[in-house]
Image (cartoon, rainbow, N blue to C red; front, side, top):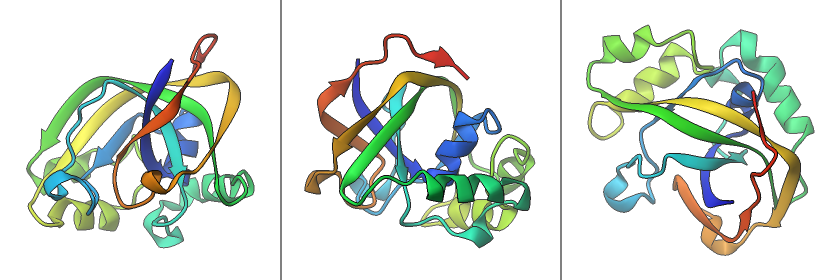
Length: 167
């Protein structure tokens, strides 16, 4: 059972679910405590978001996943959970060259990586993850406290992860 969810672009959730992405790059949202992301959970549900993602920020090879994410978008006011991840490794990258060298295991363009790297203070967290498909999708009502530019959301009711299979 998991009650912690990680808000991420829907296209990135699709890339993780498809086995085409194995890392999550994170800076932190404006609603984070002090504006800084903290990798405080080792397992979490993927909470697809549609607000910040933009076509120009995704590598061309991943654009079909963006379209797939849009087609799978649940109705307004509903969050659909289909996958969770287990964090295998956390690193904080403090050199832009190192962040850009991680090009193959994620969907962001170098421009987005550079922009995120330089936001507020230089650096990015890199989470190497294993992805698991839930035995069945779970839909919950989106509550007002889930809103905003933050990474972590605590759900009112935990989601059952029994029977999940590794991607």
